Length: 352
Image (cartoon, rainbow, N blue to C red; front, side, top):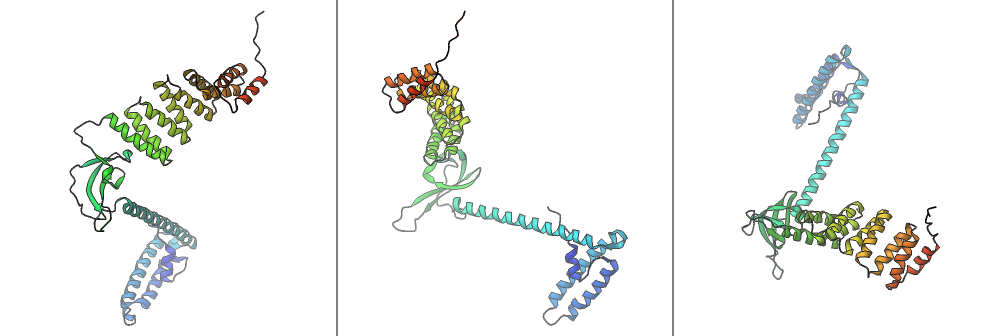
């Protein structure tokens, strides 16, 4: 609880008193104001107003007397009043800020409730047989407790009746289509294949909506269920890459290559990711592995030749680019070959 700061300036205004002051000044001001605000001298119908104001005057006078008694020399200076007023203003500003933040939180909570829990005050339309369930569309929510099943639009003729479920998850209550729930029986183990399928479908939906960070997070859950699932590792690599998280994409593609290294796809992705990271030497090694595992892929040889050209490897670049040309690659290959031919050949040291 924040400490309330005494505002001496406000008490002085209430008593019509000015600083500096002592206990005697406060007593005289109290008597003067009591004669003016006593309920017995109040006009008709204003007795209650005078009574409240006189009570505030007496409370202010009591506090000012205590302050004066505790002050040096029994007198409160004008500077002490200014300091008290500044502290009180800061305290009021802080209280206003806290009240504003509390109001914003309450509005956000009300908005969240209106959006995700529209059936909160309504008695369920249907009994709940299964208590726990997952949402297939959002598997990262985990297992939630089903609070009720509801039907909407049943009162409007001609409109399709929709069935909804009100589910309490760890992060809050959500209202989701009842068909998107998969009920959980804790007496049986949850197979890893089902977890992979749930998160894989959810990740594909997130990637279709352009939410690559969310898709990558869902794919991490799928990978934890089956660390050697090639489809999961491939999609995770793509999700991290599209999200711009190149370090995470490089780690994912290395895991993919360990599991499925005999095929060129993982090495081809690795070459492109390493190149985006600026690690041209690693990209060249990955491109070489991709070309060796897919010798009929002209684009793989072209990429290898271009990377070797960047590394100033004349002979290696020419070998890869000529291989790409023999496989029918066109486009930039002739120009790259001319660039390689323009490089100075490496000198081979001869022993005496």
